Amino acid sequence: MSLTTVDIGTLIVRSPEIRQGQPRVAGTGVTVRRIVGWYKLGLEPEEIVRRIGHLSLAQVHAALAYYHANQAEIEAIIAAEEKLAADLDQKQRWQRQDAA
Image (cartoon, rainbow, N blue to C red; front, side, top):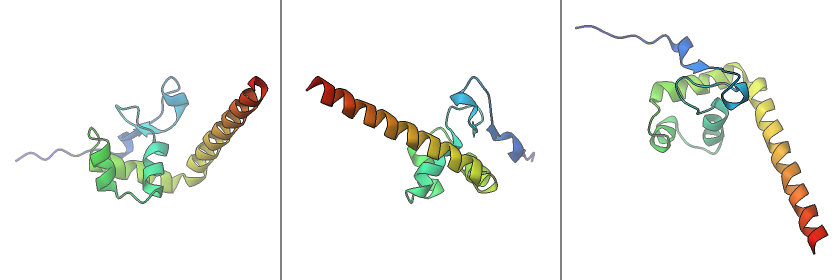
């Protein structure tokens, strides 16, 4: 019986040309930030796997481990995206007011 082991250090990668270099699950476009977002909404890792059917439980846990080891980095990404969304929302409101 042959056992296959996975080097968990290979499960999370960065590529400048994919997702602006954000940490993501290797072989996918799923970012650590996306998994963390669902986790913060109260989803268990098993539920995240069900929502993203092509990820394994090990990949989701690796993303969460990356988050916990690099929390300031991921929180900065989340904050920047929230600011961008708020800025875009404000810009749309101004455009609607100008059109009225």
